[in-house]
Image (cartoon, rainbow, N blue to C red; front, side):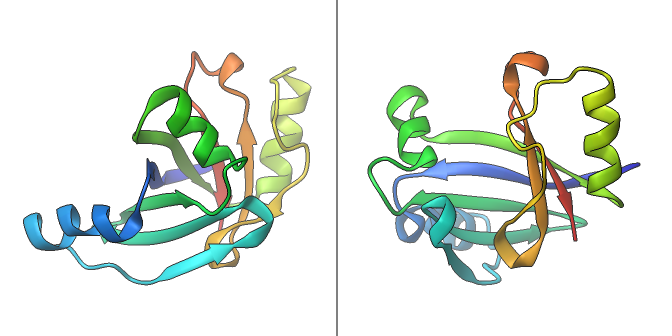
Length: 132
């Protein structure tokens, strides 16, 4: 079952520079910065109500965020939906012949189990499933 929007991922060239928008202009707080080596990304989460904004900075020129920025520029990269059982949800999607980037969950920021649905099957929107 999908519970809520967990977070919105925003690709940025520099977390340090982008944080100013959220902290100085909007008065929000950053809850921490984390690097996920396997995904070649540094993240910073900004809580807003029951959801968060996740700033994503590439740590490598060939990382997925660097490629996204090169093609689309900075901006919204994905929407993450919180699920209570990611394995079950992935199985349901496979049975519906939905194209998945991740057939099995992997570990994302904060130790969450995550998996991505291919944007070809979601009208161009990269959707992340997230179980915390």
